[in-house]
Image (cartoon, rainbow over all chains, first blue to last red; front, side):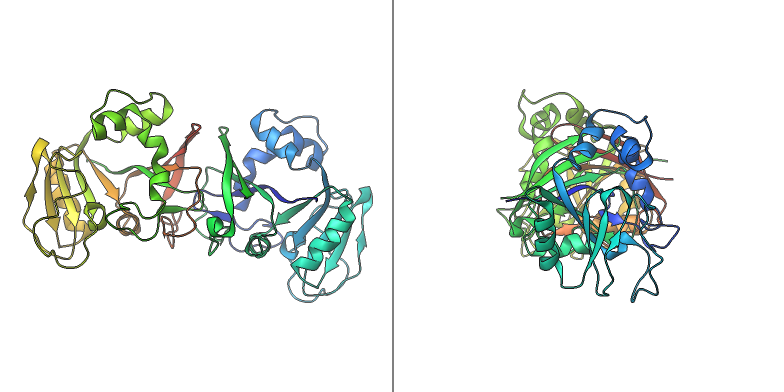
Length: 215
Length: 215
C-alpha cells in the first residue's frame, strides 16, 4: 500500500517546527525561515520553488529530492495553506505559492470550514477536507493512485497523524538554530510507545537528517 | 574569568536528556544509556572511565576530550551523584563511580540536605552545597583557581543555571535515539531570549555536536 510520509520537516535544536506568531509576513512564524537554510540552498528547491538553475547538490539535495520522489498526493494543515483562521471570508486567498503552486498534484487541506476545490495552474488542485484526518488520508490515497502521500505539516497535523500511528516514515531535519518558542514537534508525543524508531542519521554542515520509521 | 561550561551533555532526537524512572539500575533513567553510545566509544571515555587502552579517535573523541580540558572544578545535581532522594539515611552512598571517581577535582553537589565533605581517592572531593546554585558556583570558581567549571547536569540543574544566564558555553550532543519521555533539556527555556545562540555544528555517524554560547 502507498505510504504516508513526512519529508524535509525541519525542527530547531530546541525542538520547534515553526516559530511563534505566524502571519502574512511570517508564513513559518517569526524566525521560522532560518530553519530552512539547508533546503533553500539545494538544487531541488531552487528548481522546484524558484524555477532557477542554481543550487547545490550533495547530501542536503539528496534529502530534498527524495521528498518529491513517488509522491502522488499531499495533505496539509490549514495553517500551511494560509494565515486565515476561522471561516473563509471570501475566495481570494489562494495559498502562499502563486497561481502555479509547487505541488503539481491533488492537495488535501484539513480545515473545519468548507470551501469549494481550488483548481490552480500546473496540475495542483486544493481540496478542503472538513471530515478529519482519516477521511483526508483516504481521499489522498485514492488520488495518489498507488504512489505515496506526503504530509506537509504543520506541527499539529503531524501530531494528530502520529497519535493515530498513520505515518509510515518521517524525514526530519534538525537545523543548527534556536527558536526559543513556537510549536514543538514532539511535545506530548511518545514516539517509541507509538512504535517509531530512528532508522537513519547523517549530517551536512547545514542540518542533521534523521529518518524515523514505524516498526 | 573562568567559564561555566556544560560539556558532552547528550539529548535524544525528541529532546530528552535522561530517560524516565532513574534508580540504582538505571543511573540515566530507563533507556538513558543509549544516549551515550558516541561517548562510550571514544578513547577519552575508555581511558578515563574504564582505564582501558582502546576507544576511537576522531570527531566524537575530540568533543569528549574538550570536555575535560582546562576544567578546575565540577558542579553536579544531586541526582547525578546518586539515586537517593530526601535526607541522607547514612554515609554509605559514595557516588556511582567507586572509590576513585572520574573527576579528580573538587566536585560541588547541589542538595537540600547537608552532609560532610567526602574525600575520595585520586583527588576527588565531593562537597554538598545546600545554599543554592549561586553559592555552588562561587565555591566552584574559587576551587577552580582560574580554570573553568564543568556543570555535569542533570537537566533540572542545567535549566536553573540557564535561567540565571550563568552558563557561558554548552556542548550538546544529539544522539540518534528516541526516548519518548523523561526530562526534556530545553522545556520552558527560551534560549534566544536568554542570549544564547548556536555557534558550532558538526556531526559524526554517532551524534550531532552542537555548541551554544552566551552572546
